[in-house]
View 1 (tube, helix red, strand yellow):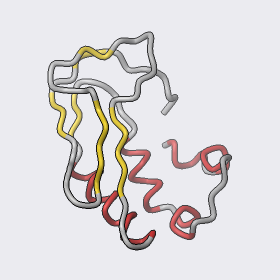
View 2 (cartoon, one colour; view 1 turned 90 degrees about the vertical axis):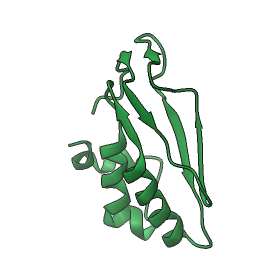
View 3 (cartoon, helix red, strand yellow; view 1 turned 135 degrees about the vertical axis):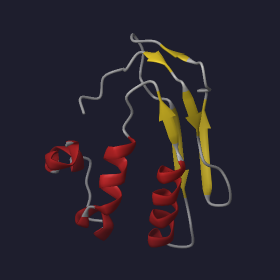
Length: 104
């Protein structure tokens, strides 16, 4: 994971929805992802009555997300959802720097 744009065509693109989930995106099947701009395809948010519920919803939402044709960071976000410091809420702005092993 190097956090650089992954230009190309999105072949498949499905983002979850429903109670406790919000997805803001401009992406759609056939979208041409340019290589010269921020590579953000979507912003996926989950909420619930408590942090654990929101994390469970986010895990499900990540599992339901389908993106093919370009590289994406869903595997990284799945690893974060299972990492002990994240689950404990022991995070800072330096979280990724402190957990380089997640970058796999």
